[in-house]
Image (cartoon, rainbow, N blue to C red; front, side):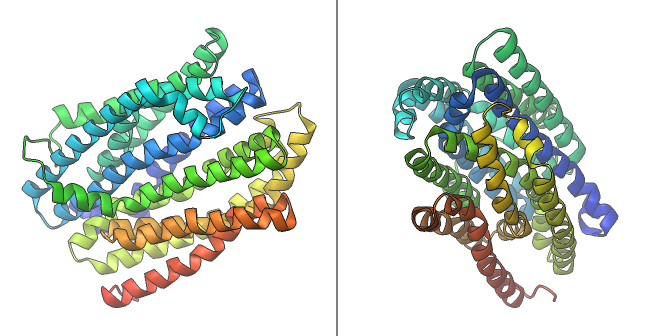
Length: 442
């Protein structure tokens, strides 16, 4: 495996990156399934309720991601430096933390779901849908824990194809269960949440079995809790938490502005846009996550030239896909909208106009995603967090709270593109600085 991590050429690069891209695209597709099935079966009110719950969903994922990504980067560096015992202890400490997170959200779900739904802005018709969906997400969050653990650590083991297979199986199960629960058993929005949780469980079981019974490089051992490692993991993975949390915060702001200006239909429109954005952006996320273990390993092994190769190849690939994503979003926007709703003409027209503006996001967003993950992989959580915080909270919040009052609804749709273009300045500045201070080759 070490040769695969050290021999960086385009063929070997694709060997690691393509399974992760396919994995992330598949995740985005079956994530969209909830929105498509709910919208088709239950209507735009239920779709809007799903979007209202998104901040809570982001918070759950972000907190898990923070530990898993932050810890995996450190453990990857341990492996690259041949510190196997240290890697095992750190791996075990991460397992302790993930178990606590799953228990914490289970308790939250039992006692605070309705209050959280109300706090997120769910009122009147939206509240029952949002409460039902959130309850199942919270109490079943251990499914997300083992799912993310499986996807990240199987890749760190070099088992990219197994990680992809686990994702595909879990995703297919999610789609089938969604259809069964929503259409055949008429469980409504509860069925959508239950299908998502069970799909995540099925996905995650592959990783649990692998690390429990296979001869993996890193293994669980009973060890003392290392709070310094957990603190370092959270700091290093803080950009992922910031990114997820900020997505929730800005979604809340989007929902508030749209509910006050155009009503529920505006929330339905932004829901469709965010689903499609996740689908197309998942390719960028897949590239960035695919090279993460390669970056961490080569950084730990002091192979700086390999790091430069990985960044260069990823930048070329992201630039090419950016153009394709822009073309798809503009050429097939009505087909994309029709996946969710074919009856409401006002919703279709509003969302089509938004797509035209929003599509400019794809020229830049992939490079910001790559930049944030690059710094996380090098255990530089500070720069990664600043990029994520600026991109996802600072710029978006300022723009969404000011621009719509000046130019109207188009100000809402311009928020994300403008945020990405402002953030790329910070990303490029930090990358240039790291190349100079850590002697990465030009």
